Image 1 (cartoon, each protein chain N blue to C red):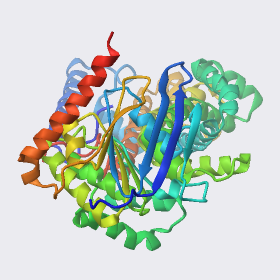
Image 2 (cartoon, one colour):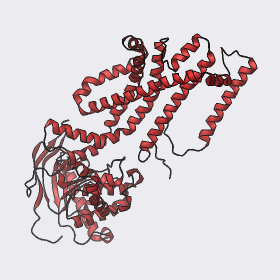
Image 3 (tube, chains in turn cyan, blue):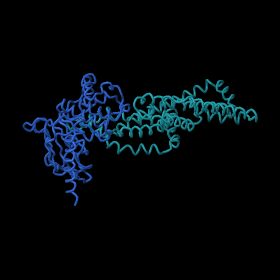
Image 4 (tube, rainbow over the protein chains, first blue to last red):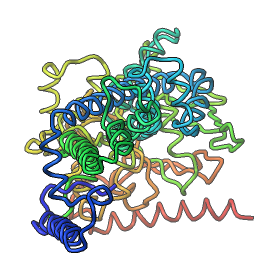
Amino acid sequence: MAPVRTQSSPLKIVLPLAVFAAAVAAWEAIVRLKGIPPYILPAPSLIATTMVADWLLLQASLLTTLGTTLAGLALAVVGGVGLAVLLSLSRIVEYSLYPFAVVLQVTPVIAIAPLLLIYMPQDVAVLACAWLVAFFPVLSNTMLGLQSVDRNLMELFELYGAPTSQSPLARLGARLKALWYLRRPAALPAFLAGLRIAGGLSLIGAVVAEMAAGSAGAGSGLAYRIIESQYRLNIPRLFAALVLLAATGIGLFLALAALNHLLLRRWHESIVRRDR
Amino acid sequence: MPMMQPAPTLVSLKGISKIFSNGVTALSGFDLDIHAGEFISLLGPSGCGKSTVLRLIAGLAEPTAGSVTWPGSRDSDHRGEIGFVFQDATLMPWANVADNVWLPLRLRGVSRRDAQDRIVESLALVGLNDFAKAYPRELSGGMRMRVSIARALSLKPRLLLMDEPFAALDEIARFRLNDDLLRLQSELRCTVVFVTHSVYESAYLSSRIAVMSARPGRVVAAIEGMPPGPRAEDFRTGAAYAQLCRRISQVLLDQTAEERP
């Protein structure tokens, strides 16, 4: 992932916007000139008016999907960081649990979604799906980060902060101290990288589960709107929902990139500008 | 240093051998007495176990055989009396200079406010008062090493262990830090054990040099009777220094010649 620069030239913003505007204009022109019917390819202007006309419906769906995504991400952070900390504190726990986390990751979740829908209420199943895909990047990145403390710093810690007694409780206390003083800050960059991946995945998980849930109805999200619009051949609304979904992904990415920047701007190489 | 009765022994290493779990014998039959107030250099080829000696003194490793004792002290835990400086500055990149210096005190349970005076004092010793709020990546290599030394001094250690601390620095920064280190030692009256593979550095700094053999390491020669007088630019360019360097090099050469069949 490209590092976020503090100050970038205006071209980096202007150029992609110009390309985007040109593409939309070309799309509009082709649809009008060739007279393509809206149920095959609606013009951008029609998508925009549909967005306004159907806003109440789309807004409710947007909030549903956004809520699922954010809740899934939050749970993934809690679970991923919690498990990573647990694994880093005890080798026994690491050996017994980590393989299952990997199994969870390599199984394509879309295959689990129908099962989840059988065992859980629909909204819980969708949330569980979002959580499952977002969980692993948080876990593996945080684990990597927690292990990336400079060895000499750990030696300093041993020199100055090691427990005076060798009781298991004292050893655990020392590990917690090392965790808080050294491992936690050292793990922050890797954790944030995992979080940015997990943000996108959580949205994908929510969309996949909504699609698998299909026509179940109440409190339906954007992905369900897309399926529904397809059945009804309401292609302009399908596109409008798609635009909102893309906007959600972009917004999520920007928010997490900003968080990353905010937390690391003073000290991390990926952010501090090299030239001076 | 005035000639008086020998200084009391601070740390005594007797019959040390160290075999790592991978079967490598790092040290064998290693004996060394470290006297209070001296500046002793451990000089030897790379991989001769110099760093291992420091880790044994600090209690970061246990000898396979032999003993590390502090004859003049009844305490069994000496970790609070030791300052350790690594070859890299090993600062915490996420913390500013003051917080980095705070680390040893913090690990000993001293709050930031109570440590403030000590932090300022330590930074003043290495001439970095104005950089308390800077982050490590904003500093040059020499300044980072100064922070590392300030951190080691923050506990006011009786014994300063330095593991090739200036090896990665350019010559100008190294010369300056050499002089500062000697000034610090005379101000703080601490004992320094300095690991190096540089004949010139050991000749400039030390009051005594222990020459080590290649692996398995042990002390094969001690060089004492350093030329008197202050260490400064004059000394570095003078004849006494050149002669001392030649003497040390000769000892080192003789040792390596004996070892090769």
